[in-house]
Amino acid sequence: MQKQPSGGHTDPLSDALSAMHMDSGVLGLFEFGAPWAVFHPSLKGVLCHIVAEGQCFCTATDGSAITLRKGDFIAFPHGDAHTLGAEPGKEGTPVSTLLNSIGHPLWRPQSQYPAPVHYRSGGGGERTIIIDLVSEFPDPQRNPLLRALPRIIHIPAERLKVLGWLDLFLEFIATKDSTPKSGYAAAISRLADLIFIQAVRVHLETDGHETRGILRGLLHPRISRALQVIHTSPDQNWTVASLAKEAGMSRTHFALEFFACVGETPIHYLTEWRMHLAVRRLASGMTVSVVSDQLGYASPISFARTFKRVVGLNPSSYRSE
Image (cartoon, rainbow, N blue to C red; front, side):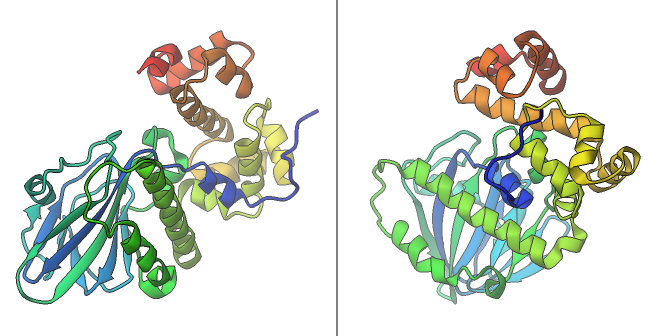
């Protein structure tokens, strides 16, 4: 008999979002006076900007520009390069140059900053204050929710309602003391989780018709049921037939509709989700045998074979990295 998710009815989207935990991060406060422009190169992480005061323009590499006002939020889930500036289209100073001038290296995946970053510069014109959050998701290539997100998420202040949070942000990073702070890295990761998840929710509420991949499946009244049991009970011996039963659909109709929504077969998605969980659990120090059992594999050998095929590494090697 298959184990059912505990706790009664749950929200499949909440289940998926709760699995999105950012690991490392940096929180920065940048204050500029016009004229100014800063170039952010592409990175293997997620970069979010919140305008705390004033306004600016965000120019993508294709030349398109977005006006950002106080309280506006913009995120680059795939780390795309872009420029922020007092005017659109201006060539920006690399952000690494700004950081180096105050003794900070450019953020890299798995790097931890022990304290907030503060930078103040620019001309004597209109002042703009920008809060930056940079984080990474473990194993982003196999994070189905991250893969489904657009290149840019822009949410005006009135939608995200972040204005009430600005005082909390500013208080959190107000100190000019750059000495390491106990628990700072963990606090930044959780803060990044909170903001990014809220932004994704608002994005789905306003632009849900444009979603793709797992996001489209999570908004489907029937496919979402199958995704929910995959997420909450990955150890079960799911088949297309049993997942179709959970969705209340015929096997053939379910298989076709699942592929149309998610872009992959149910079993392929199940395997990818298991490997996504496996990477996180191995990285946390769990043994191969424990992870194998938790994800429903008949033996550590069969788990290791699947892991090597999908991830490209032996699980024991990944765990030791």
